[in-house]
Length: 395
Image (cartoon, rainbow, N blue to C red; front, side):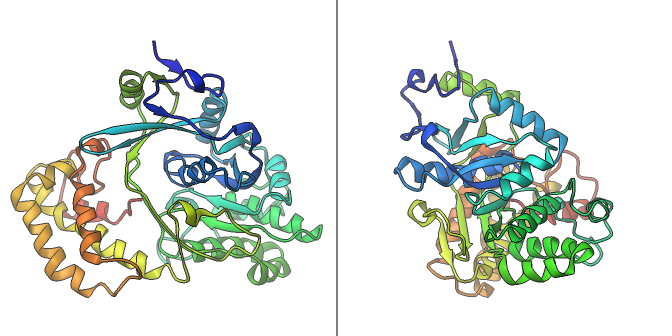
């Protein structure tokens, strides 16, 4: 009979399932993370789990936070399993499962006072985010922070007493630290947005300028917002995934994460309050993320765009199915090698040909079929619809 995942059940899980090599009760909080979704639990949380498995930096555990009603459903489900997550990594010919335990608490959604108090705790040295591109209040016309959005206007009118946005909460936490003489935490976006650190900084400073101009100036001078490039295919979780987990690994998890084996994180090393030693578990720290972002946008996103039109016209719905078609795959290879890769500037420590080969392998992985290619909806009404769908970036 499948076993319900919990700290007490770790010793009873099937041997094929990897479990933490550390005692979760020994962890101490160092990061408050907004947006405990699938991508976060397959990315930042996995890197921290790897680090803790080496017995390193156990004072950098995660505390979760959220502002949307669906976040509370996630919180309640994870609380019932002691904040543990089952991560299933899938390749074409095999899958593996592991239990991760880097999160030690998840604050009640909507409890602004508790979230601000935790942000003001000197132990919290990083506030991180995965809130999706839509959560940054970007004006679609200007592609800049929108200070007139109703949510932002409401937080400004409330003078940050009960903020309801992520940026209002972050700003309130920073203000309290400044007012009590505690140094600021670093604000680290893990969302799939070019220049995500700059975008986050604009939102926090933009809100501050509406209320406390002197606080805005202090944030500009004292708070770090490192840019990063993140990448991992992480499909949505449904009953299919829960059943696969029970059937294949003998585990019951209310909200497991299925993802590809590949993951990548390139991060600017700008953490005045300190950071975990993530470089020891595969994170690449650099001075400038921009070359890596451009590589990804052109080779990966450009590759998506290249196969979208012919695949849609041929009534092909999934990426791996497109890659099985000789004509589509040949077109991709021709365009990538002759048109895209030659105009991508050199990227540190990266062979562009090898990177493209990796993209081909990822596109061809049938285990990720639940992740519908954004440009390949079940019904394609027009080429314009395909093109519009491709504009949505994919992490």
